[in-house]
Image (cartoon, rainbow, N blue to C red; front, side):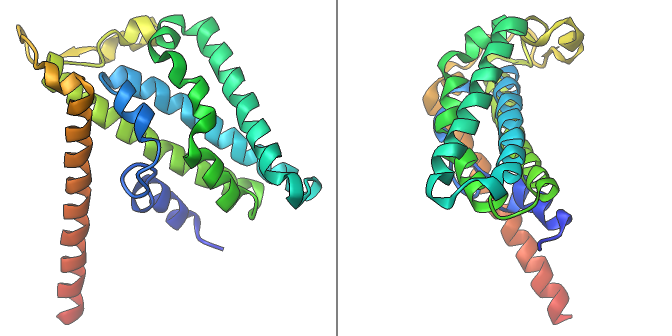
Length: 220
C-alpha cells in the first residue's frame, strides 16, 4: 500500500495527468484562454474524478469483472451529467463559456484510466485521496496555463470571474498590465501549444536539477 504522501505527490506532480501522462490535452488547450475558464473546468473535472473513484470503490465488491468497465463509464457519465446540470443552473455564464467541454469530461481517458488503475483495487479513502490529488494536479495546470496565456494575451488575470463564478470572486479579478493592447497568439490554440511546451520544459528542468542535487548529496 502506497503512503498518502506518495499518492498526493504522484497526483499533483510526479504522475501529473498533463505534465507526465500527456492526457486531456484537447480541453486543456481549448479552454485555457483565461485562468477563470481553467479553474471552472478544473473544479468540474475534480468533482467528477473524486466521486467516480469513491462510487467505483464502493461498488467494487458487487460488480462483476465482466461488466466493470461499462459500469464505471455509467458512473462517470451520470456524474458528468449532474455536473453539467448544476453548472447550467447555478453558474450559467461559466457553463456557456465551457460549453461542450463539460459533457466531454465523460471521454476524458484520465478519469476512466485512474478509476480502473486505482479505485477498482483499493479501499474508499485511498481512492478518494488519489482522485483528489490527480484532480488537483489537473486543475492547477489548467489555472497556471490559463493565467499565463491570459496575462500575455490580455494583460488581465481571472477576468470575468465574478460573472462566471459569482460576485464573491470579484476580488481575484486583476489587471496586471494597464492599457495593454494584447497579444492575440497567446489566447489562440497555437499559443496554448507553446505554453504547454514551456511548462513541460520547466518541469523536466526542475526534475533534472533535483536529480543532480540528490546525486551530489549521495557522493558527499
